Length: 369
Image 1 (cartoon, rainbow, N blue to C red):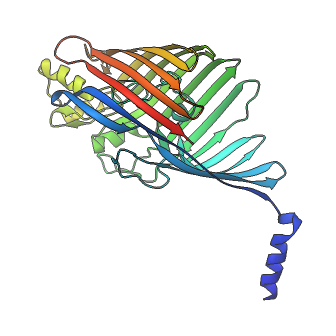
Image 2: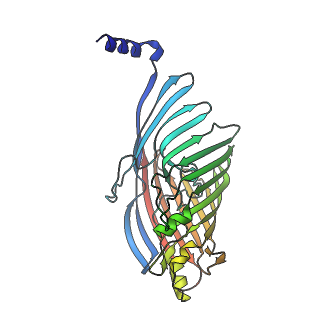
Image 3: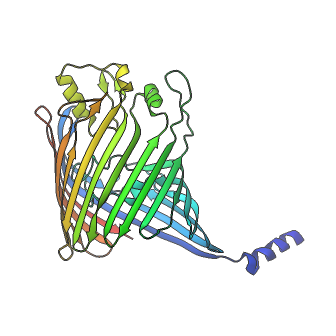
């Protein structure tokens, strides 16, 4: 009893008294109605869709520990207001960490730099190719990750993220691989001007793919730069992706290394090629360039995006007519500071005959809280 009372007394003393800021509940509910024409493994497919647009609910908080040290935490969860998906707790950015004047250190499931701190090239809310479906396809989150964010120094800042590979899957020779990931983000922002760079690399991507045959990203990077200050919205981007494609039943398996694997397989089939498993060891490279320009008019932000996806490069050689060109025409209407309406039409044209174009018309509504 004396020990318990002593413990309570110590915990209640000023030396151990810290300010807990409580729990903040936040999130976004968003959905869209879209007419989407996509190119699938069986050809062109047109559908009318009612989709969720990355709705989420989160809980976060902090505690002042004294001497400039703050404990921070967050649990963010994906929700689908359209009834699809099997959502789980902490499915989005969720972490525990510490913050000081020297930066922020977090541990958990964390976004890479492109996913959390970039995507200026893609201001809309949409389904299908009603926005930058292909050029942002690799933006995502890393499990079992540690991320450091530096303080802002005269407009400059950086982040580093490392994610452990806890599975250590065996390669085709039965040897354990290490598919750990590393991400570096660099940023400059000043008076509306910005320049951002993200580089991400994964460990034994080739060995992992040789065993799983599902495709694996080796490394990729994207740079975005521009000027955003009312009324001008200008963002440019360029991206390069390197990796490997899996092979199944004589065709390449779907993988984020390429834009649309169905287009690639159609082009290869037209040339009479049937793939063997050895093709999964070939280096694959894709490159994309994006320009987005908008101009604020009152509560409206009309914008246009132009994207060029260059032909896929396999084993050092380009595969003809596997690149794409895309345009998106859209607008955002600010109903309030927290509620926004979106409308966009996008079209993707694949080089040459034999592959139908893709398109999407989307109307969306989003409410943040």
